Length: 253
Image (cartoon, rainbow, N blue to C red):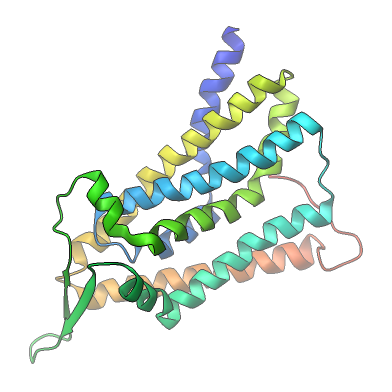
């Protein structure tokens, strides 16, 4: 019993560490650049974690309870969806599509840009005042900003769900304890992503008004990073791991 409890506690900590995986951080950075508040960014991280946990739990439970075997080509295809998501997020960020969607779909949020002789540009946001209760912050995000991190989290959960489930099966033989492991792993991921998004949002929150040009530069940088990392993963999965060949090689990780 003590060993199982120790493993479950470890699952929470591993979930927090899982939130720091490069593809997760890159994807969430493209979202955080559009948030102007640390609390809102933290909430976005929670929503991403909920979507990620949903996929991990559903796919992991199927593998544990029904002993589902995932073929290499299917596993690599699941990972390729993450690369495609990163490429899409990067492209949308660089073209300004995400900004346009946010300004037009998020309620009570308008970006007003002004130019003066002594500064390139400045920006201010008209909308909810900063210090708001969680319910008001959640409402102020709008449906677009709520669904976006959830969907991205669900897609990213595909890449790691099989690896987590297989690890649990080799460690915990009781299926219900194994499912409990998945839940705690997911909770740890939610907590870790909430902290990461809050930290990532700090520079954008503090520079969004005073240093608009620099903030815009960081937004472009996050788009380039997401696009480049997505292309790198696509090449790794498609050609190095052999998804586009007749003999794919897949190791869940």
